[in-house]
Picture (cartoon, rainbow, N blue to C red):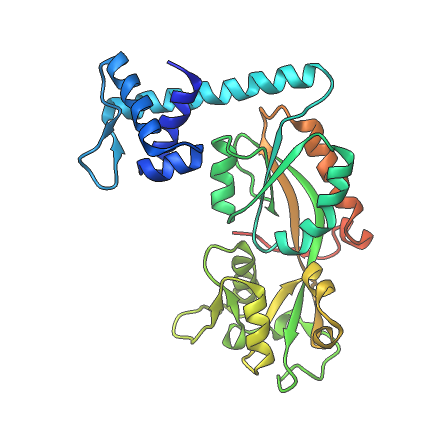
Length: 311
């Protein structure tokens, strides 16, 4: 039994496909299949039911794979302990980021972090909140940057900054003549939303629901997977949308004239770091937090508004 064989088995369990598992491990499918088969022959058990599509673990395979995941987790922790005991770290720092943060934050922090830790290889992965939570629990990433508070058992939260929700509307919109938009004036009737899975969408719906008990039932709603599409739709005269403050800063001058602050009370989202309480790379997590706070506007570091729930 080798660590490599365990990694192959866990990869097949994750992807439920030998080809995709082999690709993720950087080996050929015959190599991966042969190593798993050798392990099964050594233990005289079948780890996977190959007759099913997609492939799935056998009952005994499920139990063995859970223990394999524990072993792999501890093996990685052992390597981290050795590196950190030497006062330096040359490994990989794995960071997950939600899609409504990554395009507007990463370009502000990647170079500063690389300058601070030139020997560390940073791997950023974009995923939705639920996916990041599972990845943290499965030790697939070291830390997540996402909307908080989430209050997940076994996970530690570290608030970073507070980001205002900004209204983006078109010239003919009912609120185009206003200097700012009241919270109570927001309506799901003409609100363009991100698609399901985005916590930013949840916050917007929660805010509008709280205002007038609205719901999406029976309404025509335009939804998209990214803010850029929503912006283009609004510019064509389709309702309005809400965007995060850092995105508003990155808009060009022509687009910024259609941005309005939201007030009474000012809605904000808390962006924080989330990591396992057993995480060993706390030194890098704290360094990442410091770099992020140093590269966003200072006014975003204090909570001046009502934090909306990301769920």
